Amino acid sequence: MEEANNIFKLMLEKGLVPNVQIYSKMIISNCERGCIKGALKLHYEMQDKGLLPALETYHSLIYRLCKERDTNGALTIYNEMEAKSMFPSLHPHTTPS
Image 1 (spheres, rainbow, N blue to C red):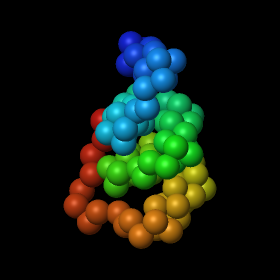
Image 2: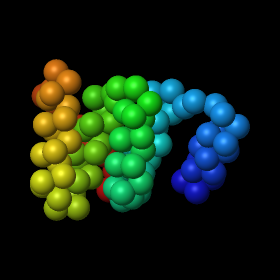
Image 3: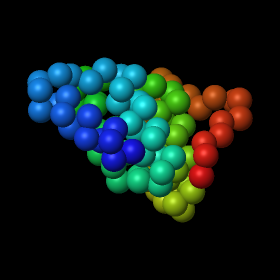
């Protein structure tokens, strides 16, 4: 993950703009590794750049926040998702611990 973060920072330093897929992978990877602060930072950064997170990204954030017992944070992300007319999938979603 450290190498991915370094490459991401290098992209930004070179003036390259990450797309939705890159942000999503970074957010999901941070969630999978328990780094919710980093995931949320990237989540809001991508939106500040006008990029809409994918449904999978929202699922990963909500899953990790619930795992961290941050139900208020999970509800905030859920409400944000719902405000964008995105709704959780009825299919099971699994994210490695």
